[in-house]
Amino acid sequence: MKLPIGLRLPPWPPWARSLFPLGLYVLLRGLDATVLKGLQHYGLQHPVRGENPISFCNVFFLAQLTVGLAALWPGRRTVVADLGMLGPDDRRLLAFDAVLGLFLGPVAYYFALESLSVISQTLLFALVLPVSALLARWRLGEALPPGFWLSLPLIGAGLVLPQAAMAMGTGSMEDPTGFAWALVGVLAFAGSAVTGRTIAGRGWPAAVSLGVPTLLSALVFGVIALVLFGPHHFLLLRLWWVVGVIGLYALTLNLGRELALRQAFRHCSVAVVSLWGSLSLLVAVLSAALLLGEPLTGQTLAGAALVLAGVFTGRGSGPIRSSPSAVREERERKRMPPWP
Image 1 (cartoon, one colour):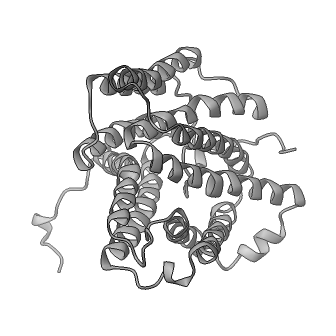
Image 2 (cartoon, helix red, strand yellow):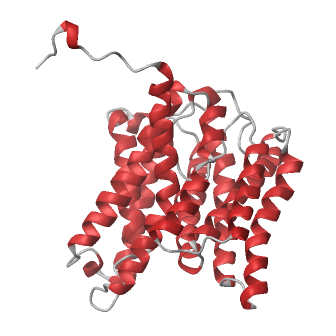
Image 3 (cartoon, helix red, strand yellow):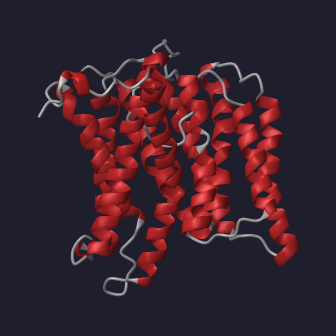
């Protein structure tokens, strides 16, 4: 039913059309680690056949399957022909990007989160920004952001402060295994930022650059789940698992975040989205404290403030991906040097 002409709602102003998707993206991105950590804890308390039904393989199988299908579907009629146009070097680049950003990075992210608090893990993964900038300088010849050498010590100080305070108070820091996995994840996501920018410069359709590799990586996670746990890992699961993993994590956080990011890029520049997207760090820290009861000390807040200051200082004109994205960065369509 249409409203009478005199009662029609006025159109949203331009600032509101850009603010809503950008704010939604920041919120969903910041909640990612908190929700995943909550699912890990809940799975430990509600095992299926004596096993935690929340594993890296079934969670990322469903999350990547959702995003992969969404990216592949619009270009499904031409994807075979588009893939046939890729040369051997292009296929190697696409495979390397998928291994780093769609497999190794998410696995390291998951296991780091198992051993660390959400707050510590979030702060550590802020290192993706400076490491990406250094790799882009080395591989692509890109100039370092103007504030890079100031942002690096700020981020480093923000990472050290909470752990130093914990060591002084309790005599120990968090699990070193978590730090090792976080380092692997940082290197993997930073590497995928460089390969992702190279792929973006070649102008491939989203079905090729994201849809196909994401679906293939989802199948890899599915096979790993079957080999490690058997078919029951996907069967006999409880309602909370379906709602939490499929509804909340796969559809809302992963797919919803990508759709919000796509809308944000339609109304905002890459620099604006990249800059304000950094506020997801605050969402992660506060949500972990409110929803998971993680301690929010003064040292932790000071460390987060230092990391956030370093991130803002080190932002350049282009985005640095810290996780796989379904958005084709149209404003970054300049030619990149060929991948060796």
